[in-house]
Image (cartoon, rainbow, N blue to C red; front, side, top):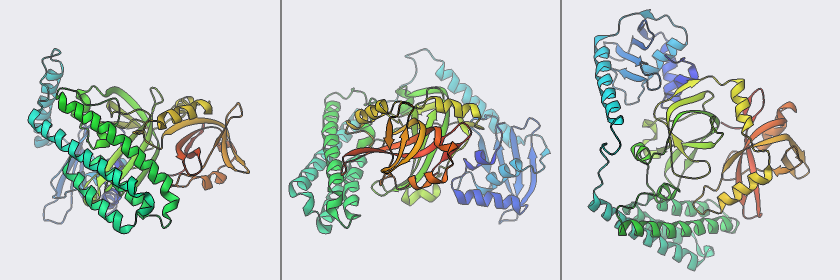
Length: 479
């Protein structure tokens, strides 16, 4: 069984409330029985509840990377507070008696083993003999036709806004455009609908519309390019239904496709036996999508690539969905699924284990930092030329010194190149004011994770520091 640290247990909880409730059960001594098998792969117990009979809960770690939780309580949260309490009790050193595995769990293990054997037999089948996912061509044709209608509707809306001029946008006209954009919800293009809402939210949020015209125009230009690419792509798929989905860019996701893990596996967008370290984490509200987003920036220890995890929680269902959190341990996964994209690709995993971060990990992370700011800026500018690209790419840079000048803070490398630092408004987490609180040792010979932004109104590319990695510690400026 993997080491049950508090941080590892926290990673299973749906939210902070579940963590508190689980710890409260331990603090109140609510468990009437705490037991484990001799090999330590199964924890089980009984916890007092609201009914006459205690709730039976268990945590099965026979597959370390994919533990199985069970509880007899009626809670809709999973894992529930009883399971979390069981794990916290073990991590906290509470005495667990040695006991035989319960018969019902032994039976469930046997059934699970049979399912696993069947999966292995299917995976070992000769190439070409595996069953492929069947596509209903008629349904696909109808969906593509509806998407094309939605794209044409969106194109007309962009034309109307541009022809009328941004200066003509007032609350009444914005409300009219929003009502028209709602029709896109009937055409399987939620990504395009969210892009429109983002423009309207930007303008509505500002008392001085002129101050955001440059940004709004840039967003409309990017939307126009997205619509053109989408129209060409959907038309080509309608002509040739056998045409594969685009896995070279984020086009499908921008239109609104939610990639399933089975699709990523089918497209062979998967890497084996990977280790990652989270360098930064934030949660924010995406009003345009109507969702909370838990976003983490990670470094792949094998090759130094910076990737992103995003967990989407719709506003209406957020309380029933797992909320991601900061992770300070190294994550190990046998299968890392990679979404289509370029710089800072989105990744995801189903099964994972954790281990403590070491000095060697920090040394390895620092070794991947880019020393040439010219090369870094060139990579970012080439990335931003793509209208589908994320407008706030993230890179890891090496700084001989984080210095303060008359114009503000800058990163300085060994050759004297300077990278100006600034807070990015769209990020919503200012960090520059925290730098003076660091000591001089922490500001020298450090790797700095930065997020870039092209500030159109001022005509310059700036970077905001997110995390500093020194030889001795990782300093997150927000988490």
